[in-house]
Image (cartoon, rainbow over all chains, first blue to last red; front, side):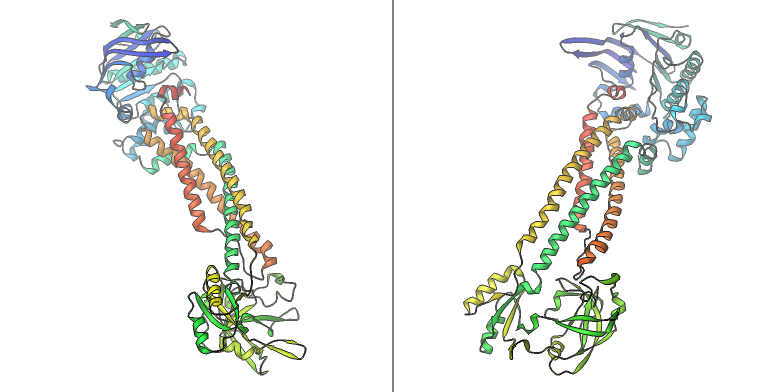
Length: 225
Length: 392
């Protein structure tokens, strides 16, 4: 995942605001990246662009050596479905669907996963996030931490190579925060690229690299021992 | 993604308060439209039935002097039949074989002038002497009980086939025994006590004297000229005038009846506009309400066309449920109207029912409208980024 001179410009009335400017970086598989910075520093904008949820105003973005800035909506959808797992602070679960059904949602449009395997795979993923016994619960019957773990299981549904999380522990207590970060760390050691935007100091305990953003620019990037 | 995958999502999301209210409202509106279409069709077809009745297609002229002149009249384009006006009136006879509550039945006997006017429902048509076909809702008693069929008393088709009844000739006083060989559905306004017989049989029982005025008998001396369609009546009338006759219509129908169709048409139009308005607003609000959910689907990789198919499927299921409910309510309404309201007027068999071809057009239009509106509102939604959708 390589981005070069990435820019995101918001035009508000007569004002132009750069949410992201001249961001260049390469993210590799098997590493855990933490993106930090103050509010308004462009962290969430960056992760949304990396997760193909938003488009940059300018710059290049090579995803698996493919320039994704030139892809159409359908092609981006395919990459989001198979290559990227995204976790939000607000969970964004389907409230009418049970936990295991939420996890199955991305699998329904993935022809590589057999219809008969879906439910079994969803239960395996729920087991991974320690929620197998809650498979038949609706989101509103679960705590915030449990909902976030359902989200994590859904993000892993199609076994993506990139896990992106925007403040995944922002609404969680410390116990749940540790569970989530532990799972993310485990995934990175298994070869997945994990990129987490977080305010939490705990993230530094797990990250291999930390990227600090300020006013939309990469201020500092460090490898953590 | 196959159909069962769409239903996997739908089974959880389709049942909610909003959709149930929509189904109820739409069912009521579709029912009203179906009733309007049926009433319009009923009024219109009754009018067509009335104007195409043999009486309205008949011109009366005086008898020609020669056989050649007679031939000229028969050769006129659109003339179906030229015969004595003796056959223009039926014959009411008492039939003691049909008895109810101490009263004898009365049957109206008519000559079968144009076999194409009758559609045999059960049994067979007249092929031999002394055979008759009677109305499919045969009731020889409605005349005796203030034109109201008593206790819903009708002979069923199969009950009357094979029955025989005796009629005394008005000419010779001989008694003839007629056998009912079939039942018919009338395309004109035959009363429900009507039985048709061959012209020869009719001649046997009906006198040539039309009526008695003092001591002087009046004979049937005129000719009736039956035209194929009421629209050709004026053309034939002109031809007969050119040949030196003075044709006049046996019966003229009042046009005001036709304007009755405009009332249900007007109601139908208003209800259609309301239905469109409700559909538009509901689908708009429904999709706006689902914005976050659509954002989630897009986020996990659902393409726009997949989301469109999913939304169309959901909306069509709601529409089809409404249509099924509407059909059930409509059928119950027709059953009540036909058995309670129209029963009073069942001297003739008029009934309200769904004109399927028009209903089909209406339903296809409704389905296309739902598909188009879904596409229209989703297209607007797809202009937003996933983040904007998730932020609702």
